[in-house]
Length: 262
Image 1: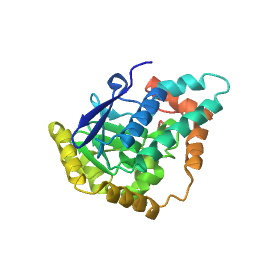
Image 2: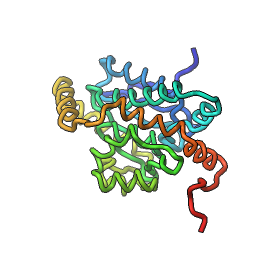
Image 3: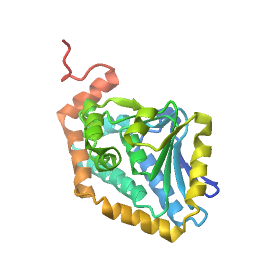
Image 4: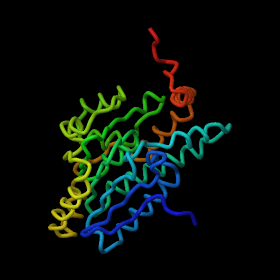
């Protein structure tokens, strides 16, 4: 069995889950999604884990979907089933984190982009290092940020969500805090200590009361669109010519064909 891409460290009063693909900016490959899913499930049943902290190894928190892996999938003539399965697995991971009965904290050490920003949005609380960036540039690649959309809406409201999702622009940590995507900004060296301080504050609450409160929050902010529909809305554009053109332009470091050159 290959080594997990997620490091699992007990740090009283919780656990720190670290995404460990620094050479790929912690991009969400199939293996990383599977390993993170397994780590979150382990934390669910871990009596020492009163709180779960999610962070990244290296300069980035998470660059989102592994576009190299996606491009490799689309080279084959008919990979609709694999693309659909990938979308379902990521959607299930988001739902697992969002509905976890234990409090979750995103400790954003660097860029959190696309699906990486989605991981931030599904955590209960989020603290970012000063130099962190956030954004949802999917539309610039011919993709749709469907699965993260309802979580983003809950935090920032429709006006800010429309700006982020339709322009694909990145925002810095201070702006992310201003619009409600994260709770606080700290110097890089104080990021994990700040997250652990929050974990200690959360541990003052009864485990049952915390779980019940999280369940009520989930039910009061009910998501109108079923998760399967969101996964389908994310997967379908990946099979279009527009997406293939967007990926080709991204890897060639040139504008997509629909971008005006005037």
